[in-house]
Image 1 (cartoon, rainbow, N blue to C red):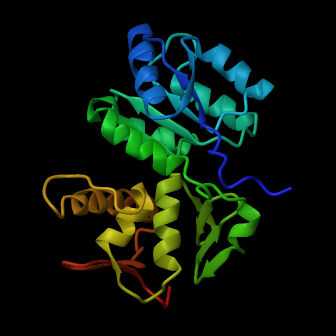
Image 2 (cartoon, helix red, strand yellow):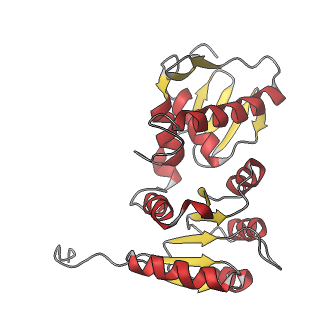
Length: 247
């Protein structure tokens, strides 16, 4: 029997993991007020066990700096469990090295705690929106373009037969650009892949461009570490970037 359209949707259940008891209490109240059902854990090992047992959670919000089992170790353990749950890292450790490693370990978003509840809740809505993490097999076949190979199922990239250690976000950027070889892709479209459609960041109306430039610089460096002559990723000044069609 189809669901009754008058029946309200089930509130999304969130696993919130942080060893700061005050933050857990205050932020869980914000989540509840926003219509979520938070399941709070001050002990990351207990949270991991609950997820392994099947909590039915729609997403996990995770701190990085925790005793015993830190956030990165938590992400690695969650990956070993093959738990299909999107994870947002919410932390005060915002240096790029922490963000890159968290995304590499499986986090889908990385947010500074100081951004405040309104921004965090907006990012959470994007993270848990329907179809956000569709089954990889339904996403399509691998993309082969010259010496570039992108596996949509494993979200891995190869260049000249060598693996390029891209984060999930970097993989999505390359997939977007290489999926339109020879065509110019604007800053806004690239940023929407990074953070979600319409998300606003940075200073001023076009502040997001700084974020895109930094992301492109990081992923270009990873290709150059494998191939010093790498030149497939080109800049279109004032507009965005393109992936050369003949590479």
